[in-house]
Structures are given as structure tokens and as C-alpha cells.
Image (cartoon, one colour):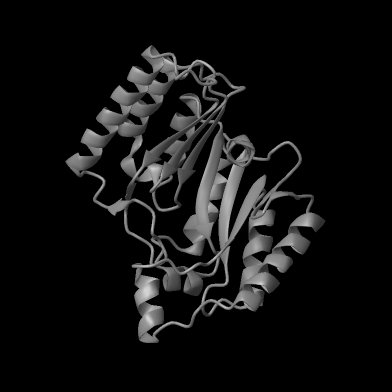
Amino acid sequence: MPHDPYRALYLHVPFCVKRCSYCDFTTSAVAADNPRIDAYVEDLCLAIRRKSKEGELSAIETVYLGGGTPSHIGMSRLSMLLYALSTSMRLEPDVECSMEANPESLTPNMVRDIWALGVNRLSIGVQSFDDKVLETIGRAHDAQAACRAIEAAHERFTNVSCDLMCGIPGQSAESFERSVSRAIELGVSHISVYPLTIEPHTPFDRMVLSGELPEPDDDVEAEQMQIAQSLLAAAGFERYEVASYAKPGFACRHNIAYWTG
């Protein structure tokens, strides 16, 4: 059946250095040299070229490389993927091209290379600038690495986003407030704040069921979301969807595409 041209393209890269305790996404923790990643990226490039030949990519306005952790697969595979995109659609500066990255795998060289290949928006999974909180949720980086990653991103990117989480067991209001303030100080243009949810069959779910971990407290999450809103509004960020705040002109167009269909 005929349909309107697609305007938003999501590419899923389902590999991470490790799975976080709260994660229920379709991802696998595999070593960066695992041949499964090569096979997946090759298949994804073939799919991109096939859809291009079918005329499905002619009107794309936003591209989002998510995961998983796209930065985990390394620069040679990212180059292959971004080259396939650039030869299969119009990947010009007015097309928003976002890529997710985690601090442990984002290097200054990668920042320079992906920017040169057409990525113009970088979303960094920080979650917290408190090492104890990062340890609780099973992240592979510490706060110092998160700061270094954001600073490296700013060498090329003006459009840098940072993900933070609230309502984590053991995370005080003061700890969360410091994380939001640190993200603002580091000069990011977009911040997403997600309350922790316990998803079935995750390590956190098993820990809650066994009594090792308390269930997230809705009142605590609501209080911390309010802290974020107050701090971000004072810093010039505008809330444009439930969990996302942006400086004027930096709202994620790909996110908006989901909300507007």
C-alpha cells in the first residue's frame, strides 16, 4: 500500500560492553572484537542500501543511531555504517543525525571522526555524576569519565545531550541535584531525566523480589523530577516533552517525530 514518505529513521545497534542492572532493551553484552558485531553491521548496511533503492529514504529529516551503545562497536564499523547512510540518503547538515554514546567508549578521535562523517548531535548516557550511584546501577564508567566524554564531545559538537536518572535506591536529593548542576556546568544543550522503573526479568527486578533492593518510591521520583525542572528552567532550558529539556533551538527533532507521529 502507498504511504507518506518516512521522515525519521532509527538504526538499532544492540551491543554494549555490559548490561546495566535496570536494562530490558534488546541488547547483548559482547566484546568489541566479537564477529557478531561485524555480521550485524554488514546486514544493517545492506538493509539501508535496499531501502534506499526502494525510495524509502528520500525524505528522511532525522536519523538516530541508538542501542545498545553505538560507540561500543568502534570507529571502523561506525565508518562503514555512516558511509552507507551518506551514500543512501541526503545526509546534509540540515538533517539531524544523532548518535548515542557512553563515556567508556567515546574517545576524542571518535568525536572528530563521526562529526566528519555526518553525525551532528551526540547523546551521552551519563545517568549520574555520583560514583556510588553509578555503581548501584551497574554502569561501566565513573563520574570523571563522564565529564571527560562531554568535554571531548564539545571539541566538535554544539548539540550535546546528556541522560540522567532519578529515583535510584540510595540516590539522595542532594546527589541528584549535584548531577543536574554538573551537567549544566559542563555546557550540554539538552538533558533527559528518566525516573528508574523496575522492568521484569532484569537484575533489579530479581533484587526487588528477593528484598535486596527497595522498590522505587514514586514520591522521591516526583521530588527529584521537580528538582530537575527548577534547576533547568533557571539555567535557560525549556521542557518540551515529559522527560526532556533543551536550550532554545536544541530540542531533539527525532524525539518530536515520535510524539507527532
